[in-house]
Image (cartoon, rainbow, N blue to C red):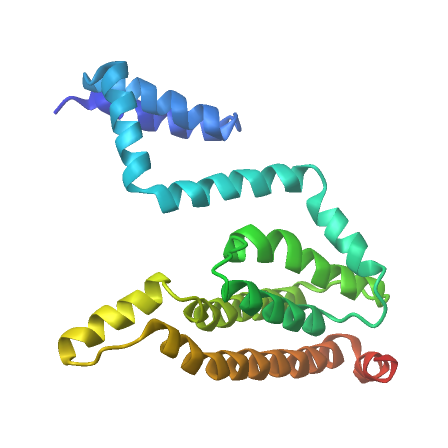
Length: 234
């Protein structure tokens, strides 16, 4: 076995240990592996292009992460927290519930914001934490972790049910293609209309549940008076 081809792994380990630029490390390791492995620059570019085309969805996801990371470095989280800090009576539960409503509406038109990594983490969570700070409290780690789960849960519910409202999505086509061999000719538009009340009920029930859960969490971590004050002001 030619252990020289593992030189790329060594470059990755050393590069991350020295805290060098991540993208530069990956590309350097890939180029070195291609040269040592004997496929050359042409073979490396061909492999890279083929992999990009065959995994377009993953490539788009990576690009979104890079864009979000750049925005975060330039103050995206601070801007989101400052924005929600100006709103009166805003609570993390209400913010998450409103996000669910917005998410299902846009999902009905097959518009995605990048999911948990692309929108919930850099936008919704800073807004939720900003709402805590605006109420005069210090965000507690346990409370923030609960909010992360709630925001991610709302994302999953809204997108899961909302995407089926758009005629021609992968989920709808999968249902149609699965039922057709069984003798059921499913019309996509009719299926979307049937799904509409289901999606509305799912998002509303989840939103109400998270608002009530957030109320209990605020009472647990900041006292009953704090939770009651928000309800009276709202």
